[in-house]
Image (cartoon, rainbow, N blue to C red):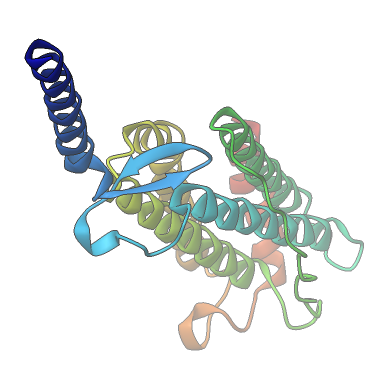
Length: 230
């Protein structure tokens, strides 16, 4: 009888020790984790309970931002293709940018699928109408720069959030496929703006008014043609 009690007690103690050890091991991680599609993401204490699925949520927001920018670039591209303006290489440049933004959105969608996340698309508002007599290539380049700057800020925000979550897969994907390309786009737009200023295409307050139509056409046929042909 004593042997049976002793054996039972030892088994109970073993089970208890194993349970305590498991709790300690899991406690080192689960207290600082959030769950997304069954996957655990370790997070800093300041990030706990911020939302249920941070990577999925922020990437869906970015997908929709890329699609809105795609819409904006399409609008710019066909504005300059219209007979009222007819600057074919400005048109080609903005349509190429539209393709890039669509590619970015599809890349992030594919990434969501890879991670088992749900893609949530939202309605896209119509882009603004640009009156031909008031709008010009200088305003278009400045508008495009702001679009790219907004995307860059959001990509950096998601990258920072991924690092807080210790999500090295997402951080690496953004660094490899987005960050450098964004800064290259910003640099290219600033280069175009600088050349527009030096060639006197636009003047007035903040260089956006009083567009010289002949200079603008020459810029399209030389600088923008070279840029879109390379």
